[in-house]
Each structure stands twice: as C-alpha cells, then as structure tokens.
Image 1 (cartoon, chains in turn blue, red):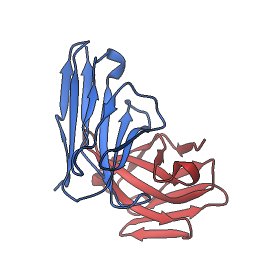
Image 2 (image 1 turned 90 degrees about the vertical axis):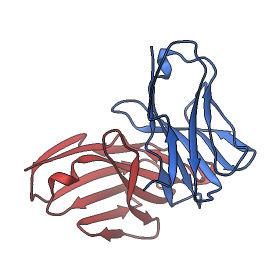
Image 3 (image 1 turned 30 degrees about the vertical axis):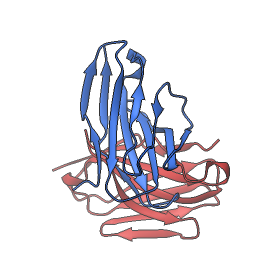
Image 4 (image 1 turned 90 degrees about the horizontal axis):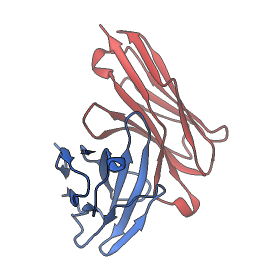
Length: 112
Length: 114
C-alpha cells in the first residue's frame, strides 16, 4: 500500500490549460521531490522541498512551479501546458536527505 | 556534474539464469547508491541501498556491490524469474552542493521469459 499518493494517474489536456498535479504523503516526511521522466529516459529532479515554505529548483529546468504550505502536500502546477510538457511526473518523499526515498506511482501527462 | 550510465540498456534472459546489471558514475564523491525497480505505469520501488563506506548489500536473490573508487556498481540477480521483469534503475545520492538529491541512470529493461 502506498504512503505517497499522486493524482491524477493519467491526464490528457489541451495546450494552454492550467493544471495542477497533486502529491500527498502520510509519513510526515519533511523532504519532498518532483522528478520528470520522458519515455525511455532517466529521471531528472525538477523541484524539491526540505520543509514547509521551502522550495528549490532542481537540476532540470522546468516551467512548472511548486508550493509547500503543508508538510504532507507538495503540488506541482503548470500555468499554460504545452506539448513539450508531455512526460511522466514522479513525486517522492524522504525522512532523511540521503536515503529512505518513497516514490508515488506517477502522473502520466499528455498535452495535445 | 554527476552522470550515471547503465548497461546493458535491455536484457532478455530465460527463467533461471543468473544475471548482472551494471552501473557506472563519473563523480566518486557520493553518499550512497541505490537500486530501484520500476514496473510499467508504476512508481519506483527501492531494492537495495549501499552506503559509500560499504562494499555490498544483499536482499534475497539480489546482491548489489559498490566500488566507489572506480565509480561502479553491479546488481546481481540470482535464479531469475518472470516476475523479475521490470526496469532497474541505479541512482546515486550526490554530495557537496547537491546534497540530498538523486541522479539516475537511464535504466536496464529486463525481460525474463518462461
């Protein structure tokens, strides 16, 4: 059973729409992460947070934004979706910075 | 910048074979290395974590080794089963200014056929 939940699992939307991908965890972890994975490619960190009101950009530049108002919730928002945003987005959390990662099942986003 | 490479990109074996997946990384200044499994349409499941001071970790039929100085890790799967079919990902926890972030390889797609 998952302790970190991502919704929706699949999303197909039109260009220009605003979308929010939800991620919630019940483990009380301070550290949360968003990774982007294109088909057949490696995961790339796009955002991370070490606690409430703390967010940082990751290694891969992304037009998305994140917020961390509550410990358990780390949503990712795209203000105006484009076909180049088509990808799988994986959320993760960890108790410690260096180990103990738990990943969600991911959201597969298709922008048409 | 840390780079992680996994070979082979894909592997197809008959059931029962022992197999080795390889992972190499360019910067040896890591805190630890982790092997994950990813099933189609699902998230990642952690398999083994090796601390930078360790040489290997074992869990059931899985054994992972780490040679930090040469920047290499291997994942050994004994007596493979069809249920082992998945993508296996290697990831390093970087040190220095990248503290706390994972760098992934592209993965090895494993197919074990009956």
